[in-house]
Length: 149
Image (cartoon, rainbow, N blue to C red; front, top):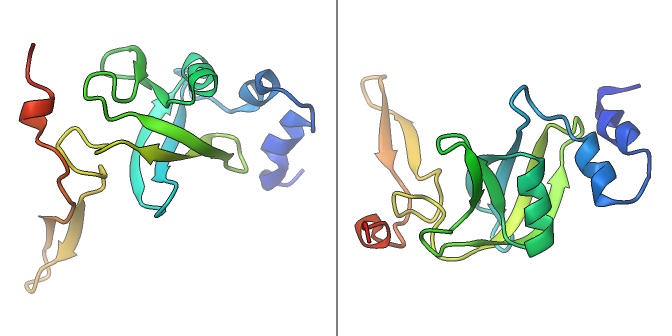
């Protein structure tokens, strides 16, 4: 079997969400990587991780759910900020170990206020060194959104 057929062989054309979720290749912590992309303009918004419960909640509600590795719990994207992600489409890579979620993002994805978490460019300077430059668009003030209540 070629490497590109692994996921499809595990699904074996059987319908149902349970079959698909079972066929995914989760890591040692039971997580799968999800790359989130704006469905309209194809901008990459971020990378997060989901366990099976988070994926089930995503399909049940139509809102992106993840597993927060720092909080060690299920996490609805935007539960604190209101900046939710509405699932438009989902793709799985050929190995079944990564997901591409195309979403409609409300406001910004990044907790630093940017539309995308990929808001920094790595640039080579004139003297041959590498530097980081902010290149993203801020769409909200994190101090206002995440102030303690």
